[in-house]
Image 1 (cartoon, each protein chain N blue to C red):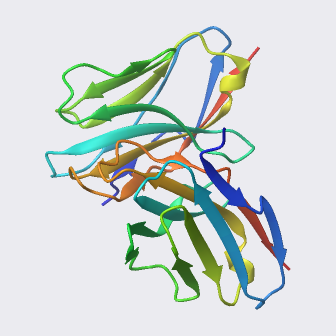
Image 2: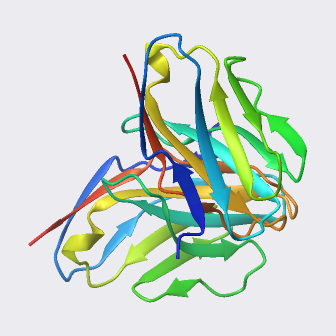
Length: 112
Length: 115
């Protein structure tokens, strides 16, 4: 049974057109993460939520926003996607002790 | 400074042989966790193994073992009896602090298992 679900698996958007990626979890973990991973690179942490507390990485562009309406769901909003935002976006969860992260299958974003 | 360093961009191993993937880390925090993940071409990150900084013994999970050398700050992954399905990217990662919620990833090692 999938524990971290990401929808859609593939997303195509137009340059400058807002797009939202979604993540849900059945693990009841209080920490949720969004990573951006470009081809042949390590995942780059964009931000994470500890419960409702939002923690933004210093180098995450303002173009990227996130919402967590409840424990189970977390959204990544890209307000004006550029060609450089084409990447795999990975959602992950962990407990507050953080012994591991559980990743979703990712959403591949293509910007035309 | 890099928190996690993986110096092997690519590795090849013969099927059924063992292979070691290197990872060194940098932290001054006495409490940390070390992780290895496998990422096949499908893109999903699969958790393999975890080692806590206070763990006395090296972690093992089936064919995976973690060679933890605390003084050298290394956490190498050993895969025994390699299988074709082991071909993938492998990432080493670290969490700092007992309640730390940030995970730092290395640049990864691409492993190819040769029949």
